[in-house]
Length: 281
Image (tube, rainbow, N blue to C red; front, side, top):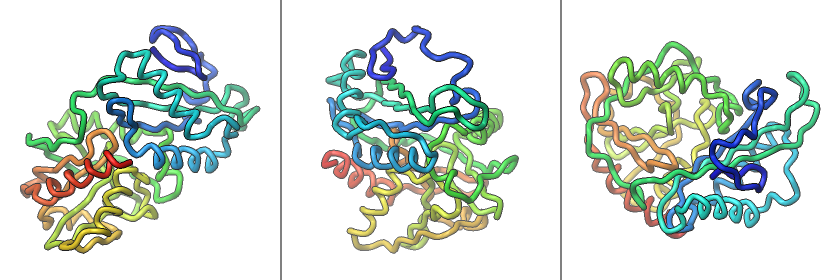
């Protein structure tokens, strides 16, 4: 079942057409969230990011779009898909109503909620091989639009195809200044001699929810120095650890980049703290 503007529809119901602005112009946003036993992980952060992103794109935010209202619609969708007592991947999409060319005829929006089952109730660390490479065919713009979750993800799509064709599990994206920005599906953290780094938003990385949570966690624990600073490709092979973060997987350690292999000691420690934070959110 899919929730379209508050109405539950069968998954194969046709409710979008060729005039949809998300299809035509990528005039859309989305949030991807994890829900376990009816509890949304980091819901307030996802909600606030969605509201801020809609303002940036000059979308009209409906009066009923409160945290409580949207959460109730997500729960309705999860219930309809019989995932209430399980774990689910939620995608909440918002797109401007059809009409106009580049200039829309309205800033009113519609929304769509999807729910799919997930295997694990909490974040777990993958122990398998996870090799990455740089994707250098196209670059991420170092601007505010790159920091929000719009439907304009063609770099991520083409990069994912490149990764599959070359037997990589993921690729790292660069901006126009040839700085490492993020992975295809999440933010990147680098560990070297007790220093943990992640690129700043000004470099064009996604303003990720788990990125934000790990920065908060690192500000409360001792033993590590945290830096929000640009990362050059040359730093990758010198790192002790590299890991990727997103709201569905949590933390994904990178095991290999070119000839360098990495451990996951810090990733394992942070994963436990991330799960604890998710339970309290």
